[in-house]
Length: 314
Ligand SMILES: *Cc1c(COP(=O)(O)O)cnc(C)c1O
Image (cartoon, rainbow, N blue to C red; front, side, top):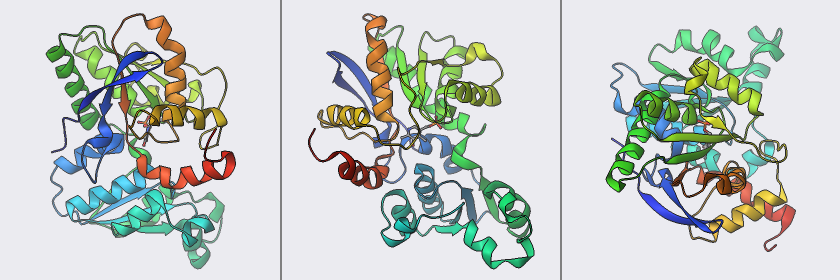
């Protein structure tokens, strides 16, 4: 149902790269979460009336699950460990858009405080365990999607993305394409590279760890596919960065790439392009594609933080 995002030419670091515009996949359901959740969009789920997920109250996956539920005509319950007070006072970004889609965002810390039967050892309850033990047994019409879409079902939609890229290179008569994308759980990068290798394609996938370090990312790859020969290649930044923190070099890179007229997001793309710029000179004339993985709603929350910290011009 959702497929064939456009490929554009993009000028970066003095050369041409290709940009796979997965941010344009669908007006309401786009980016890599849409690819990861595409399985649930395309499949029939007889008797299901509700989607249950969990994660952070600002996550791209919260918004994407709310959009998926809306497209399917399902209710959506999304469990979070807590909701920061400024999010409740002034809802923006993914949180606000998910609420507008009718998603019920459930603060587990509130729920536990109100429920004496689970008070004992309440610090031990994290969302996934709580949902599995306390919620799902009573919700017989619910479909549960674990955090961020990090599971095998993501292979379905990510393989579709890989097939689109493969078809595009054939139409272009292109060989040895290098595909680059920044990774969180690494699910998207892993299933892309696995597809190309199993198809004996000459396309290869490169990524960088934005959440956690290289060791964490390798562990995530192993969980999805223990055959490390099929893993994407991990490239490093010169420095260690913490996920969600604000860095002047991220903001500067974001301004540079957005000056092209394409909007990028502020959590993954700045580090992605910094790492890409570092490795591009080693890749000679090989064609390079960057995957725009969406997530732009998050800017509504991130940009005011950057503006407060570093100002408008720099
Ligand atoms: C979720 C997300 C990622 C990370 O995807 P993984 O499959 O977890 O590696 C990267 N970019 C954006 C914009 C995202 O929303």
